[in-house]
Length: 440
Image (cartoon, rainbow, N blue to C red; front, side, top):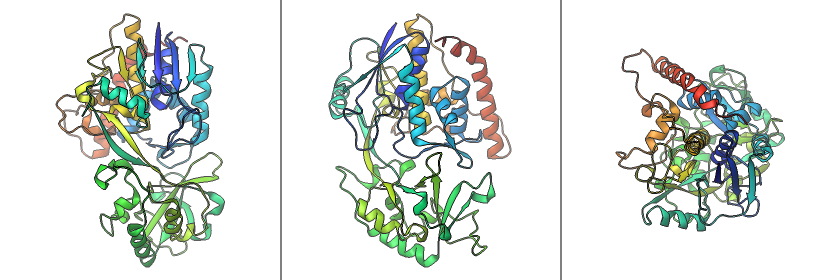
């Protein structure tokens, strides 16, 4: 049994690993480091180009449920995340370099995986999983567009990443460690702004010069990665109800809740690098330094990476793909990752996992495992393949696309927990069938 996987991001790495563990000889193509993209900085697999957070860890969150499903089904990405976790309150955040290194070592050392470095410009013959991500090279993107029906078969939006600063350059006399409402451990650095400081910052942020991004308009950004300057232009208080909300935080120097708070989250295990939470941006680098230095604790911040914006391409999946992420017109071709319209690190890994499990079963002459809508894995696959979706856009996992309970439960948290427990019971019933195949 043989298959080709193109792209060693989260989806491609997960797919290659799951195929290999099921006895499939995998050729994994990755164009880095021979050819880099605007958002990548290393040759490691599963590089996290935006946040280092895999978002909420609790089962009251849909992404927490998806993570637990993958964890119980022996996902490589969840193994890496758990092994390289850094404290981030109620979120699962990871050491960025350690996470990528873990995945790279696991994939490269598997005897059933052969890694080929270089750019693929068209899909090869045979069974193939295309997991080239939202930054698919121009040549391959053109090939895929022609393959899937030409004009209108591929869509796009713009994504952005937040800056990273060194811990030693943060003025801790103007900041403090705390978690909102004192929940969990004090994992975030909180940088307060007074009303006057906030208003001045907001005005300069709205007026700051943006970097040139061909074809970019405010309306074409994904809401989950909204650039901070785009958010600011929506109104003076938008940031105060978004990433700069002070609710649940008290400045120890005053004993009061500040007017606004910028939060920083640890980006590596050593705690030497922090990212500005919610500060995805496409301002010019000099403007980032100028405007963000108006935050009192960041007046002398040292930037190890400035925020960047890049174009993300995804397929019109409801028209093109089935629930196994296969191309309807040519079932030997499977897609995975953000190019299918799933949005987020965990969702990308989930698509790679499901695509690989079903491909391995197909190669072994076995029937598919139809993950039902009661599970997050199944709900995500059924959403991207739902032909009744009128205006398809990238989607994070959420309880709205998971099968409802069918009865009332008092309290949103209680309802979500009951949905999660039901989903995990289904996963428990499927686990033996899914995992027993993984013998390598």
